[in-house]
Amino acid sequence: MKGEVRLVSVSIKPLEDRIVVKPLEAEQTTASGLVIPDTAKEKPQEGEVVAVGEGRWDEDGEKRIPVDVKVGDVVLYSKYGGTEVKYGGDELLILSSRDVLAVVNK
Image (cartoon, rainbow, N blue to C red; front, top):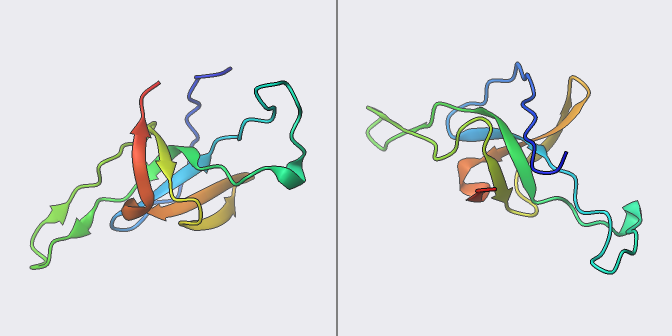
């Protein structure tokens, strides 16, 4: 269903300020109703956060700097940021928090 967030059970624990994201499917039709073939689709830049690291350490190594997103958030991220991984049958993306551009409020 559109707008519904499905939480994925992930047993991956990202380190420091890294985030695990499940990319959301890109729109498959144009505004005029034309179907876009898989070969012409752009990489998705929107995804659901499924795991978040504890944050990176400050320069003195004394306290953690928390990450700005939480599990369940839908985020926009850099087009070519992160590392794609396949885990438990799911296609996931591991991003640095610096690759997350915005949180989407739907």
